[in-house]
Amino acid sequence: MCATFIISEKEKPPGNKFVGQDLNFYTVNSTTACIFAELNRPVLKSVETRSIKNIAHIQNDFSRRRKQIQKHVHNRQKNCRKLKRTRGRQRNRVNDALQKLPTEVARANQTASFVFEKLKGIREGATGRREESSGPC
Figure (cartoon, rainbow, N blue to C red):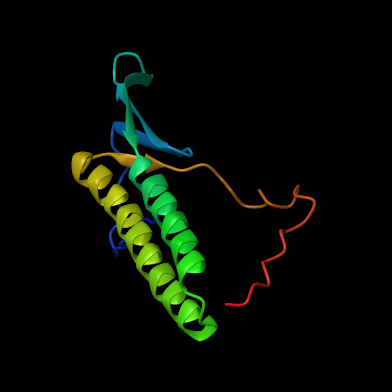
């Protein structure tokens, strides 16, 4: 998910509505909480789940196309050219879907303050990176 921030000279005070996001494999969960003056603590208002199965569908579609190209196109140069073109289309479709999500969330919660978790150092616990495939293309 990609979010663009516009930073202005004026500081915007935090509002009384907060939105937190959690990106899962097939869904994006939005949790909204409001602070009421009389309680002086946040109260859960709603939990929304947005499906991102269309991204998985795009990935599966690319997998099927790649399989068909590799099966039917035997000329190696033509095969690589077709795979690169298909890969570019897939990347564009996934990026488009991922960029529409935060726009939709921001438009739905224009007066809210967004809360993000601290992800710095999250990969330090990993044992190693996966090796990239060294295929013909």
